[in-house]
Length: 622
Image 1 (cartoon, one colour):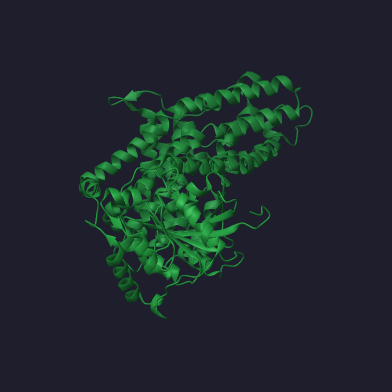
Image 2: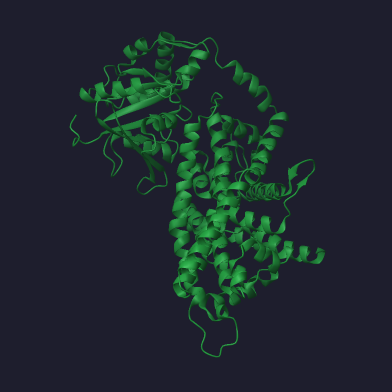
């Protein structure tokens, strides 16, 4: 095979929950890159692999779609790219349509739409192992004959589960040809004709002993019970927040010790001066104070990914639909809001799956109230400094309980805000929830590791890019201009940042924020976690002596802040719209500066009012 030949472009398409992403991971391994399509916020994931024949492939993992009659931006991107109409993206050479072998009744209909494009195509019947366990018999040869395209079995979670698919791709690429069978002209746009053809294919090639698996029915009797199901969901969420602290502590301690050692070594090797201060007090102290929280963030992501891969999340959405509808949302809002616990940006983008514009806008406006992972460094810092590490109520971690309470406060606030919006809008009707409940399955460790690696890399890029740049900028603002000779005050008070901090302190004094906190809020606009690195830099430079500057940030603030100030700052971060990227995403998704203004305005008002009450009450009680 000619190594200089261009890579064959494969488009991987399929309906949600068909195992398409697992198959993508199986084919490409670690050779992946993630970006966005030009002009939209839809995620673009591309990977590469080399077949045993030597032929090179570029695989594009397209967003999941139920139909080319697009009801969301994700489906529109998939449709246009498969047709070769998407600007800046060449048409695929071969389309691989992935279907779930246990749910062909739903997924074959979309495969018919893909076939009608007339492009070279392979049908990958995934999860064949699960189909065999359920007694489902699929005549792949008959299905291939009826569809007029190659049909191959795949098991994306097994090591050689895609071997036959790769061999078939080599054959199709060597002799590309359109599907041998097509529907009559116009039938591809007729839903009834597509349903009739799907029923005919199922009768011809598929034998299903029962519609659902026995294990699914048994689990659903408990997990979808109106009482037991809600209790199970509450227990799962509670255990997640306990694990974020209990499991991450040894790793964070190790990273913290490594950062301290690195700072000490840098101080010993460099002569005293601006360069040493920039490296030790600015870069190492600032960036290290954020990296230390990476284990907690990854543990939270691991649980979210596991719940998503297991098939539990759609059931949680179904379970919460009635409660969320009473607050002016829908069950479909659950998955975007849960995604917002990781980051509000993908959570807001995930609202594209909500077809009703009213419910979608309400979900977008309350998504920033979900406690994203960028808040974790701030929460972990303040909880570690002011909440003792001890067990209560029979072994529960007190710090984990406080973290759970902060998350719960965000959730309750989001429901209350959505309820208020429902009372103000004219259309107060409720919309039925239509949702696919996929089969339960055990998450594959490889897919979890790939997902965690992507998120760790995104987080570290933020540390290496935004946070590092802002830390250096803040160090400069804290060090310049230098005070004149004879100046008796602290040098940091004379700096640009010190002057700005004292001005802002007058605004935030009623809620208990000192000038150091006020300064840290400014770079925190770019990314919330920057507030921690900013505080580390500020206190390192404003410490009275080198010994105090060498201390970790947590004991410094526990000695200099009151409990009321710490509680006020915790409450501030539940509500504050302190993320420009989130506001920019709201603008891109709604195409409205008015909605950006509404989101920023009500979040700031809630943050200030709630922090004011917290500080005033805590000051009197303590």
